[in-house]
Length: 239
Image (cartoon, rainbow, N blue to C red; front, side):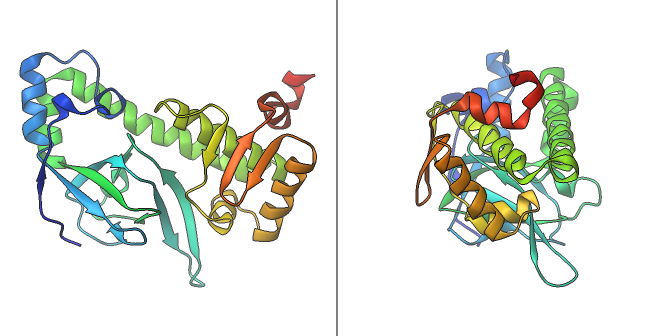
């Protein structure tokens, strides 16, 4: 798992605007280049880090897809999130200085390594980075609250519709289609994340297809009626 270090510079990375703050001057960019000095390649099915590993770094996903998961007392994998290009993984380790989940690559992936002690030092030096780190943490909290809402109060159709809308919105921010996506996770993993049985996930996908809301070919999904999905999630606003 210890992949040879590869030099990379934030200053010429096309993901810079996604995972780094805007408005940095040239001197600050140079310092960030020193901070994010290496990247690691992770093979599909391999772990970037595991539960109990010492927390040393945050990781910016440069390419590929990850899932974070924990093992339940009865031995099942519980998916806690999916992370894609331009997003940060590893915040779970800050509180206890050890990781609280596994981060597993769903496809061959590459991450930029950001040693957390250096992130903290630079954050104190220029407030733009400090504010950006706070925003990342806040976004994770909001996302966790959204998942709790999904699991606590939504029907199966609402959960899957909200999941698809969120996924395509995040992908669109990275320059991908607003209506087409390839699911990097299995239906079983989607079910684990959404608190649904595999059969319920498959049945709900089929229901959306029958209603003409989406088109599905294996892991390829095309959203045919975005407004219909939105009405499923927020029926009152759609009336």
